[in-house]
Image (cartoon, rainbow over all chains, first blue to last red):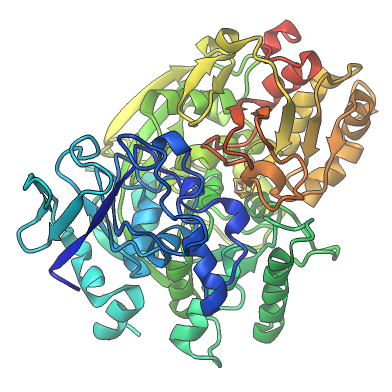
Length: 185
Length: 432
Ligand code: SF4
């Protein structure tokens, strides 16, 4: 795992549920077929109501028309990110769209597990609410060693919480990699 | 200090004498359930990790119900069912309930109960967030994603963090205008969609044990709407009787100790709760039906694992008997068993099916249908600016198909009353 992640931020509100992340009608595509699976990136976050898409102003499409990935690789969310269904397609679709990390105040359990166990992206908990402190498009640096998230455009600095006892799975890159390393399978 | 029912069941599954909240433990899984949306990617991961010739860990413990996208021309959706069929053949396991055969069941959580897979004291994982429904049988049941399910498929094991529990005690008895749906919507309004994140929601009290099994399942079904890892109701005689006619498996009944530790406790009196709705666009956006009466509707929907059980249709029939609906109304029995029951169960000497037909409802085939929107040709799906009142469990933007639509969640009584008038209507106008 990289010690630092740098990218453009995309800001979302509270209770971003899995239907907003990847609407149910798109769950039919193959996740193993390289070409077809790109569709998950194309439709990532496609059900977020336009006004809430890319705060504070909204109306910023996460994926531009005709594209399969996003210029934004860091998502900043409010509380209860990923609530709703158990679909692993949710963190997968975000990964397909090019997202490297999410920073949110809190996560729904299954989304958090799926992100970590599937090795799709790193779900990071922020120590404070960030969605009104960082703007969509800001350049952000996440530093895992110093537990900080920095806004490179204005040097604002915020704290993130340590990953805790799931760190070995995050570091291994997923549940299977972890289980192999530790001799379970 | 004593232990909660959830802690006791998890300890047993982990082979320990006791566990503490916060502890990460490895569980031995009794049943793994999957369906047509999450089954194929789970199988892909499993094959990738365990090899093309791998065998599943236990043929008797895997259950697959295709249920989400069944009656559709969508080729990708049909391919998913085809993949499950192939897998069932290749692994030669019996608990596969194929579409277009007389084994087809419909919505997985209801089918699990009907087919005897819900057994008190056991641990069930499913690739569906509403797997918590099975907790109504005094067991630990929770949802996971494909990677976790693939891990179980190969090893029979999975890690879990022991949750703290929240206790909800209900006194009193349900008045005739109220259902379990009103109770759980009330709780959601109080604790919000993240109020039980990573916690067990335990239901208790004389009020709970006066509910039938269908209604208990409505409560545990929506534990996930508060972020709960599981919902759980200790088994009683009614549970034991339901389970014994459906399986020969031996089971152990667990109860929480008097001195068990809880994160928090809530008490409710059923007699004082009013008919309740969740307004758009969140299941915790609670209000009384009275306060939103008069909102003009374009669709009514009675179905899903939450509100498509026989008891829900019995409620609806009480209001729809001898009346006509004023707005397109969809009746979607959760399972094929419920669909059969509609043909035999009577109210005032008339079958429920006939009551719905005479009222002008559209009766659809059993499946998840429009509960989660689904492909374009899904029956009852919300389109454009539809205003829907539904017995389902989620009303996040786009959940029922259109992100411009407004979805209100309510009991089958409230939906039926609203179907008759065409606007949101308090069931007490029909039932006192
Ligand atoms: S009926 Fe709805 S909530 Fe229940 S399993 Fe199907 S899609 Fe999920």
